[in-house]
Image (tube, rainbow, N blue to C red):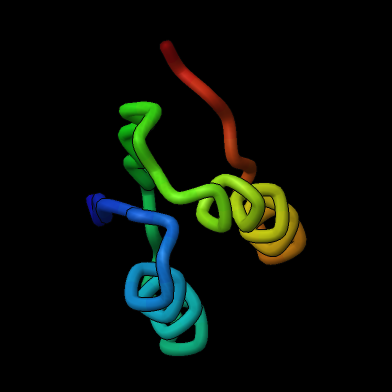
Length: 63
């Protein structure tokens, strides 16, 4: 099982895209929203969620 931490920034976005391009499956993506992220990080989350949906991963929120 492959579990990754996603911070919403450039590095973790590149990691997820790189894993996809290398055919490495990701079983679980963790994003801990502490409420203190930069505004541009929150603005980017819907973009990344769309990309994940289009590439076979359905993002969902668990509380």
